[in-house]
Amino acid sequence: MDAALTGLAGTTVGALAGFAGAWLAQRGQLRQQREQRAYAERVRWLDDKKGLYRDLLIAMYGWHDSLVSIWRDEDDGRLSETRGTAYKWGVEASLIAAEPVQAAVEDLRGRFLAAQPLILSRTRTTERPPLEAVQEGLALLESALRAELADPHRPEVHRRSRSLWSVQRRPSTTGTRAVERA
Image 1 (tube, rainbow, N blue to C red):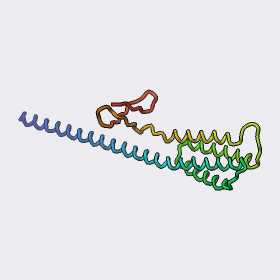
Image 2 (cartoon, rainbow, N blue to C red):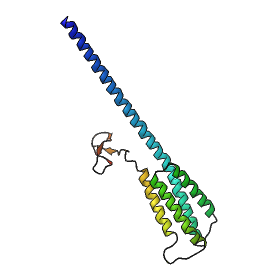
Image 3 (cartoon, rainbow, N blue to C red):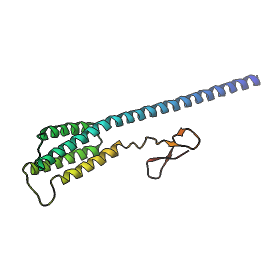
Image 4 (spheres, helix red, strand yellow):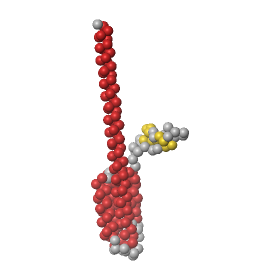
């Protein structure tokens, strides 16, 4: 009878260990799949944002160039069109952008609207050229866009000596993830 109880206890412990092992493996797989989906979503959003932000910058530079042409008495008659395009892309970017990009777009729009009357009235100022503030705003917008598009979770790929490509992550001291060669 002791052998039967010992066998039953061993079978029970083995079954519980097998169940626990299967549960842990399934839990790990689910977590890995969740992380893969989250990463794929981040990459998809980054790809979508790249195109939108490219179009936004092109539109803002178009507005800038139209004002420059007016300032140089080479008006191409496209100010209204380029301003409307810049507003359109600014609104679209504001719908999905993080707060720093939204603030940079609003700041740049304000700089354009402050410079535009000076240019249209041909007011020559001795302090600063009217578009200098706009150029600073464009640089700030570009920095905000680059910062938002920088994905700290994207792994870097490095070539290992005498082996296949590998990707390894290690925590860095700066708070972002750094990559080291394996």
